[in-house]
Amino acid sequence: MIEAVIFDWAGTTVDYGSLAPVIAFKKAFKDAGIELSDEDIRQDMGMAKWDHIGKILELDDVKQQWEQKYSKEPNNDDREKIYADFQEALLRYLKESTELKSGVLKTFNYLKEYGIKVATTTGYTAEMMKIVQDKAAEAGYTPDLVITSEDVNGLGRPAPAMIQFIMKKFDIDDPTKIIKVGDTLVDIEEGQNANVKTVGIVEGSSLMGLTQVEFDELNTEEQITKRNEVKRSFESVNTDFVIDSIYDLVQIIEYLNESMDKKW
Image (cartoon, rainbow, N blue to C red; front, side, top):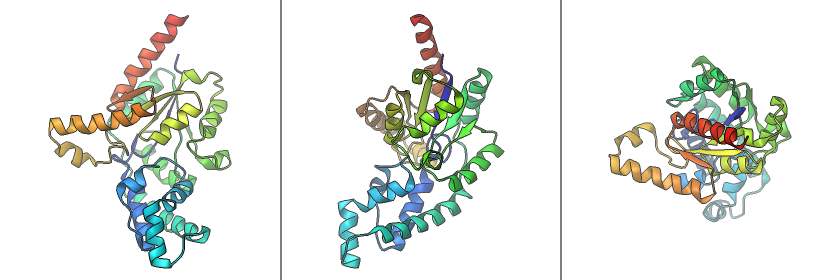
């Protein structure tokens, strides 16, 4: 039987489209004179933010812009300055926008009803998560454990350390009894590295990169095309299950429970 579900936050349970970090990254780099595209940002979304900034600074286009502006490559001091600016921008934005995605409370209540533990991992810092967690709690979403890389000596995703920490806290030895749910390929890689079942969410995901309004304004055919693009991305990394929205997670749990029952 499934004993625990581990959710990501932005793009999975809150912040449809995972917009907050994108806005903060763009502002921090723009203040440094560097223009970023959404694609530049989203390709490594889900990592710890310090690591993510390091990845962005390694991009060829970013290096070229930096050299043109400063006549040198970015160094660790530059990275620290951008990280500080990013944190400031994100903390400010999180206070304004951390709404739960549709279906989160219904799914959370189902999990509680059936005694399934709920935990979360994230690329956010503990300080960032305090804002998000408090706002989610006001809306009724209160996971049993909220873990950041700071709880595991800075070993952020895609390392399995946060999931392994959760397994110890929940006293669960068998990873097949755990589901990791996320909206980025880094989420899936984290789950795979911990040998748990992985579920990718399509709508409102960072991979899709659309706001709720933008998605709703698409016609039916366009929505199907967008969903399929995201599904192919998840399938390309062998995600165990891909669902349109969190509403579909219950079916996955029931299917896995039934499969486990048959084995016995």
